[in-house]
Length: 206
Length: 206
Image 1 (cartoon, rainbow over the protein chains, first blue to last red):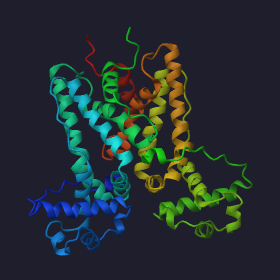
Image 2: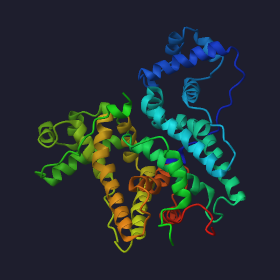
Image 3: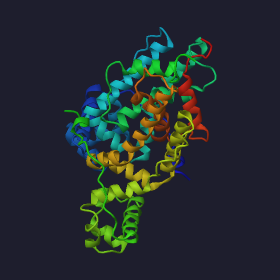
Image 4: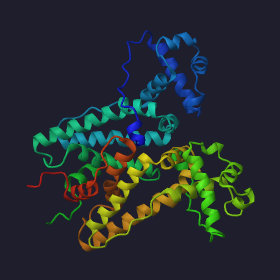
């Protein structure tokens, strides 16, 4: 069995209605402060979080049943929200989606919480799986919807599956964020990627 | 200063001529066994490696000045080597390059050493930087060379920079290896990516 097969397929945990937004915020901020300070997940305890947030342990347990769920919520709150799509064309929607990935890539270079949390998650399959279900998968569904609309509109080839097309569009941003931290994430990159990928790499005169 | 800026630009350490291949192999195998067992980098010591490999500490220190360099060499030896390029066309060379990335992606799903080492490296900027210089950068240079030959041959557009084209080609494999461990890395994927990216995503009849 491969490592991938052993990863549990997980749904994103649904949050209940918060009892007090201010208290929730203080707890989340407490977790984020600890992650930012580089405290490894293994050393995060509900007790330590309670102390940092200035609340009682019971206050935390009323909202989160364990520290993993709380950790995931803290990471979610540090992630930028989904962008508003203009809907003027598939091309424009794709540019906005990739632009938000570019901003996310820039943020992860400077944000200690995004950086540290990512490293922590990668070594914890359960948390990585939840992060995937709560953050990565919804973002991906948004992209697939845009591509499907493009196929209906005739803006996109019909003979390529949208999953592969999405990976081709998203890939370069991931390469520059993850594999090449010294690579440019310059303004205009989203447009360049979308237009280059739509046009193709062969010489234009064919 | 961003996290990216603070990462040292590093060269790949050049290895001297081995004094005894068998001893080197035993030491490297010892490190790999410990990584495979999930021993974190922080808990790896020259002493522990020496015990696992059945050699003296001095034997290790004659070859590696510190455990970081030894760790990097162990990871390098677990990485597949660069593929032989057919040289028949840019397209064929690209397919072979992406096929080797696909194999690398499959290997990292099942190889505990590639998985664990990757997680360790991500939390250690110095080691990540050396890994980048020794493994990622040479693989990348190979791809850029193929694309530059393609631009000379007229197989490739002249108006797109090769760095971006390389990221577009490599990106989907990275997405499927890193971000979507449940995604297909099926046979024929390398050809599909290369041909789709060369052709572009717009409808063919334009």
